[in-house]
Amino acid sequence: MWQLAVHYLWWILALLLIAGELLLPGYFLLWIGLAAAAMGVLLWAVPTMGLLAQAIVFGVLAFASCVAYARWLRPKLERRAPGSERLNRRAEQMIGQRYELIEAIVNGRGKARVGDGQWLVNGPDLPQGATVEVVSVDGTTLQVRAVA
Image (cartoon, rainbow, N blue to C red; front, side, top):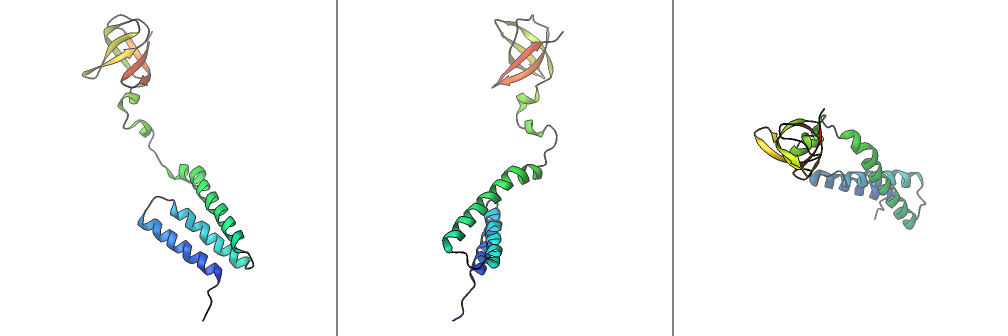
């Protein structure tokens, strides 16, 4: 019988994990697979490493590769168009916009015309017809300030 070198087993595990990544995409198995491949290279260089040491080093490599992906590589790979972080949040797209009050702000509450609709606003007491600027959003209520 022939005996397979242990570093080949790590490389086979790496191939299986990377193949699993192809079937179940998510970038998680890829990094663990790369850690298994690195473990195979390390074991090829240091063939006398014990099984417990292999398990510990593999765990450290897998953790380090996942952290490296999450902290450094993933932010660089995510290309977002300017302003796309608010794409599906209509209210947050209104921050910095100016609107006219259709109902005076009394005791901190009023209404502003936004397009062909009305939005609740919170801010300083102002008369109807005053122009306000949206500074933040709280649910479906716009936080506004007076425009000079």
